[in-house]
Length: 462
Image (cartoon, rainbow, N blue to C red; front, side, top):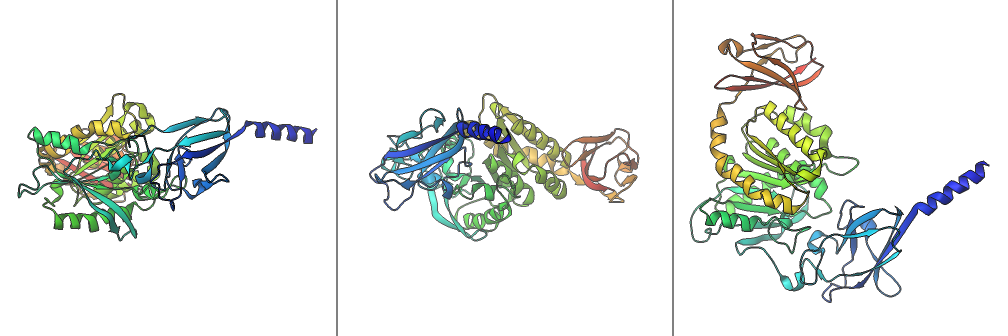
């Protein structure tokens, strides 16, 4: 009976599995004959050069690949590349195309026509403005021993003036200016800034750093996630701060001080933007995490914030789409609470109505983010320089925490937060000593607020 049952289960399992073979029936005539073809999709983390998903030539000399182990009724999304997003497939006129999709159970063979590649775009087309240039196709990253394409947006009057400009560093450079090199559409950063400049607003130099697909998650996550990737964020940020920024400041007319330097990115790029701004507070005063995927380094980022703490004020502009769900929205507001607890009083968090996790949503909110970070928020940052460090003792503490500023500010309010930004204790009539024996062991952030000044400190409860 046991053998019969095992056989039935095996048959049922086999019957539930499905596969599909993709065969490329037509390629652009200019496709380099030495290049390999890959399939990338939601089944492999959208890795454009995954060796496990390289296609092979069949007996008819056509590229093909078979995907196995899926279930009937399961739907996948995918695109074809030549190993990177710079060489992703495009439409008949070189335009961006929607993700392909396939539902298992609808046949076992799919014939594919690829019309164009992004690095040709049906004849070298581009949607980038004239004041966008490729600074370098292969800029060396010594911290990672890699090379990367670097884009520059120069303000429209750059060549006609002797002005110096603020600088905004942005990740996923291929998605910022040009639809022909983008993954799923461009942000239109150049069009947006050119319009703002025409309306009389100051605009910055924008430095766009390409991802290379294969190492994107590794470089954009500071800590390794065994279920995902990561762990090279320190080296990537060191590249920006120690190699790229000095080169930009030496070769272009920039305002190199922190008050005129910002960093911005989306999804995993939002994570590395916040991490970089916090780690290099002497370099960046403006940070724009768009749809930040804090969940990818959730166990590490909050202790990092508590350990790093407040050094210099930073303007933060966070956003995420309404349709991205609690994984993004809840974490975004948790980050706002944590940053506020650290002493950063100017954190803007926005849920974009109808927004999705894509370039169209991010590009649509870029103008508001830029104006907040570089125009309207600048004076706010100046006003917030009265935040002061708070001296605490003993630290670590067991029962009673003494605060040196309380005797000078009898009307002060004290709030204590844990490293996740959760309010744990409030005292609206504090004395010089605060009893903390009810707190669980761990790290805490304490804020002493008066009508005129805020003091921020950290302590460890034993």
